[in-house]
Image (cartoon, rainbow, N blue to C red):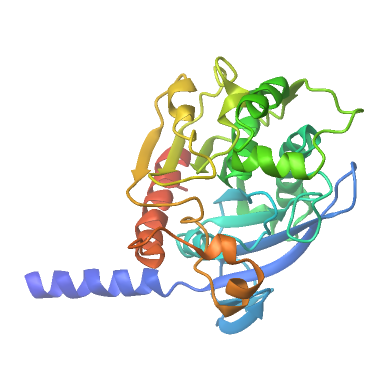
Length: 325
C-alpha cells in the first residue's frame, strides 16, 4: 500500500512538472501612448514545442487555447531597461502551476527605449501601464473569461518592485530621490540618472501615486527607490507582500529598508550571496553578448539552483495570498 501511495505521488509530481504552457504576444491599449507590448503565459492542454522567442528558447504552445478557468492573474513589471521576457522562466513556472501571467514591456523604459528612464515621469507611467495591462487581461484578451478578476497579483523586479509598491498603495516623493542623489552621487541609479541628464525642468519633483485596488498581493524582488517611500509613504500598503533582498546587491543596497516601512510585516527573504540580477532568467550566449551586466552573479552563487527555490516559494506565496480557485 505504501508503495502504491508513493507511486501515485510520483505520478502527480511528474504530471505537474510537465504541465503544458501556452504563450502569445498581445498589445494592450494605452490612452496615454502607443499600445503596450504584453507577453502572456497560461496553462494549456496543447502540445508545446521549443520556440525561439526573443533571446530565449521556450517550450510553449503558441496561441493555444487556455486550459481551465478561474485562474489568478499575475502581472509582471521588469526593471529599468528590461523587457517583458526578463523573468520568462518564473512566468512559465507560474503558468505550469495554474496562473495566467502577463508581463509588460514598459514604454519609455526598456532595452530599446530609455526616453523616460530614471525620471519621475517613468514612475508615474509605470503603474498606469500595469493597470492598462490588467484592464486588457480582464476585458480585451480573447480568453479573459478564464481569469478570476478577484485574484490579481503583481510581480516586480528592481524598478518593477517600486512600481508594484505604487500599485499597492505606496506614495512616492520624488524630491526624496533628488535629495538622496545629492548626498549619494555614486549610487548606481543616481549616476545613471545624472548621465541621462536628470529630470526635465518641466517635471518638478512631486508626489507619485499609482494605486490599483484590484491588486491583492505583491512579490518584490530587489525593489528599487526605497528612499522615495520613507518615512510614511508605504503606510497604506496593506496587501500581502513577499520581499526578496540580495545579500550582495550593490545596485539597490537599501532594498531591505522597505521591510521597515511597511505597516504589515512581509514574508521576507534575505538571499545569501545574491546580487541584483539573481531573479532574472539565466543568461545564454545572446544575452551574455548583448547585456552582460544582468548575467553576472557573485562568485559561488548558483542562479539556476536559486531560481528553482525562488519560483516554488513565489508560487506558494501567491496561492496563499490570492486563495485557490
